[in-house]
Amino acid sequence: SYHVGQLLPWVDHHYRTTGAHGLAGMSMGGNGSLHYAARHPELFAAVASFSGAVDVLDPVMTPITETTGVIDGALPGAVFGPRLTQEIRWRASNPIDLAGNLAHTWVSLATGNGDAGGPDGAANPDGTESIVHDENVKLHEALTTVGIKHVWRDYGAGGHVWFYWK
Image (cartoon, rainbow, N blue to C red):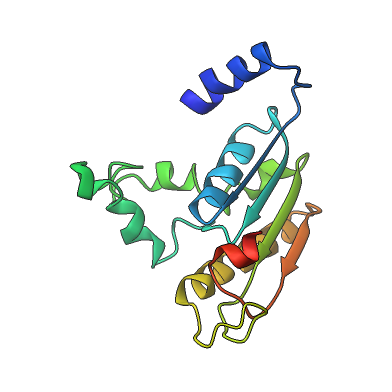
């Protein structure tokens, strides 16, 4: 509520904006960017995600999401509640489930597949990028299924690192 309800209006009031906002993020920031754009399509004209973790329902992402903040003293499930009892809240924040809301938003997705041998010269595969690649393929397919035009850049071998996000 802070970003959308307070920060965005403050920026619009204090700077010469047009009201057509854009978002971009990488990794979990890609998730957040797509989540905000899909939940508030009237506010965001464009969204880009670079190696975004775009499916909180992915079997690998679920335990990460459920334990986010625990190290800082939060209870498990602090983000959306426990998945077993709060499935609706999880889906209401999941970019893949919200894909249809992006019909009037310019969308760009970019991801590698985690294989070694990309332009950065990494000799080992990157498991994180492999996971988010599969999630991005699912989002790309969801957008395509509902007829939403978008930029899709699957650049093949490459990892979950700044080299590719630049």
